[in-house]
Image 1 (cartoon, rainbow, N blue to C red):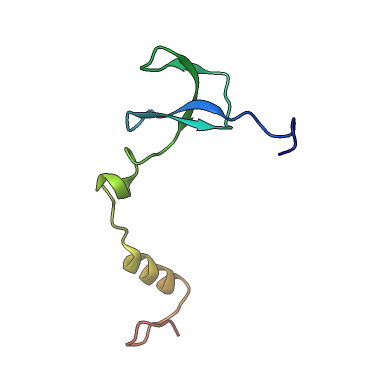
Image 2: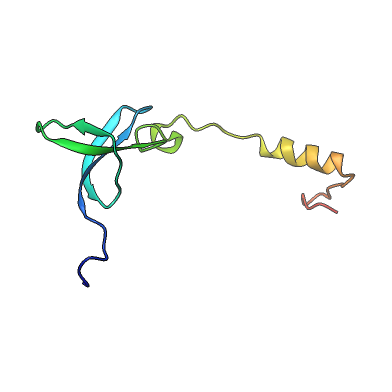
Length: 89
């Protein structure tokens, strides 16, 4: 690799505040905020919106959307009818 053109690859804590999960890994991501990790060292911390601890797919709290009702409402609004196979005419 050419020296001086790549970002520093260092330990970083990624934290999901909603799910209460934090893990230490290596990354080029950077932030001015820091946190003290379990080993007593201080690392930059990156807050994420979702992780496996808070994502509905992984937690089993997935919501089922009423897509059939939405399709019917769309078809009624724009004057479309559906045939027996379910395709819009």
